[in-house]
Length: 598
Ligand SMILES: Cc1cc2nc3c(=O)[nH]c(=O)nc-3n(C[C@H](O)[C@H](O)[C@H](O)COP(=O)(O)OP(=O)(O)OC[C@H]3O[C@@H](n4cnc5c(N)ncnc54)[C@H](O)[C@@H]3O)c2cc1C
Image (cartoon, rainbow, N blue to C red; front, side, top):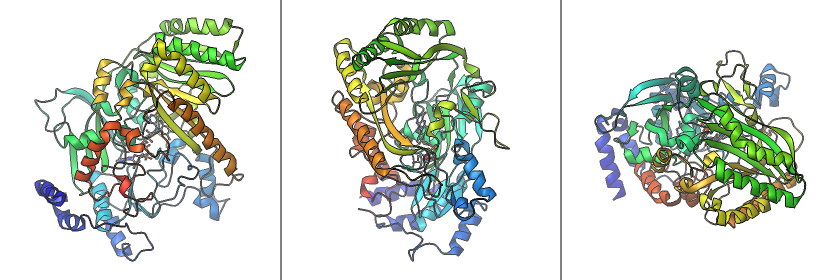
């Protein structure tokens, strides 16, 4: 039955020549794939076949080497010096075919290059790679800018489709998704090829265009990867998730077809890529996002307070939660505070649509209290203010940003200083939980504060308010509701992230040996902190792209009630799971490495 409806689907697409050419091979492999082939297997494509693929993709086929491979053979070589100099530059990592933005995860995954990579320059290159992988039964993996914490853009013995070279950005005054004329009103929009990173869009849309596009907080994250994660940025309480603004995408599906999907064409697939997880649906080659009116100001507030005792820290947490609920729980405010075992509360909040005076006035009562209460000490002075939103991502004169100073680097490429520690980090453990806004009600606040205090005894907690959408504008909520992300996000006021790791530890990198036992103890502490929060939010969901590799209920945690619909869409468009990622939709049928059907 499934086979018949699939064939019908393909027949309908027969006018698309790419799909038609592939029909015999595709149909003949349905439900037969038990195992993908590795380079050591007899079924691995011959050198002549790889040569054919190289020609088909305009020569853009490479055999990637591990990031630190040059240092294994010749540590004094210029290539080794180059990687050592640049390995803390996220743009450099994103531009390396074997580059990953984290250097691995304890007991989970280790960076390892694919056997081959197509450095795609156009959708036809991608289609050629997808067809090749399907025909030869290869493990296929997709990478944009390489920010997967869970290593889902990394797979040894695979063929990699790497989109980083496709990074054009085009603005539209009035965009109507293809085939939607008369059904969807034209809106200002931006189209970006899949390999663009968010700073490319912020530069084009905001700095040059005077409008706003909702993307991610980290400037160097890939656009297609983030949108398929759902995606949250500083101002998501004002504009929703990144996926919520998606109007259209071009995607190469497992049958090799290049589809333009939107609310009118393949609406189910369109919905799935809005938060259904990267690497599971096809290779997205282009996205078009609605742009929004740019607020006049973006602002920030920062500082750090230390409580003089555990009791004083409880009081500090309670004081902040009251302050947050009354003053910051609204579409203006996003980003974070951190609560640490050393009884400190660090504020790194941002806001949109408020002038400097208003920002300072908002924080004054809390700051005045902190300065005058004898039980707490302000250990990093408080600051607050705002600047013209249009200049928010300008690098020149911006002391919060690190410019990419490599020769030939784009002038607008830079990253936030606050993100530097993450570049190349090796992960010991990671967890995230959405906490429902009901916990902010006065009757529940004491429970919330007790749990935050208890959890902070084990590990530092980061409270990312912009990654829970309760308190957002009605428009942002309604657009975000129409995505595949776990609907819990709409009722959550915050995503709590508990994570830790150490400095970079790429394979082949020279560094003192890791203390594995200490790292495992660290991971356990993250579990213990999580358990304290689970007590007050037993069914807490988790953000697919910032979550625990070892989460056993990932289907429910990432997608909640949306999972069954996603599973059906996966079966329709990719019945053989050519697109596999760890803990991605449909991955439960495959071994952890995606090579063997269970
Ligand atoms: C340092 C850091 C900062 C982050 N900051 C934020 C943040 O501010 N907000 C937020 O919401 N998230 C954030 N994330 C999570 C991030 O959004 C996701 O990991 C996202 O998927 C990364 O996309 P990428 O292209 O950079 O990574 P990649 O590792 O290249 O890709 C991630 C996943 O998406 C898939 N994918 C990538 N490109 C495509 C494509 N064209 N078609 C199909 N599948 C594709 C890959 O197969 C992989 O499964 C951050 C992650 C890191 C490591």
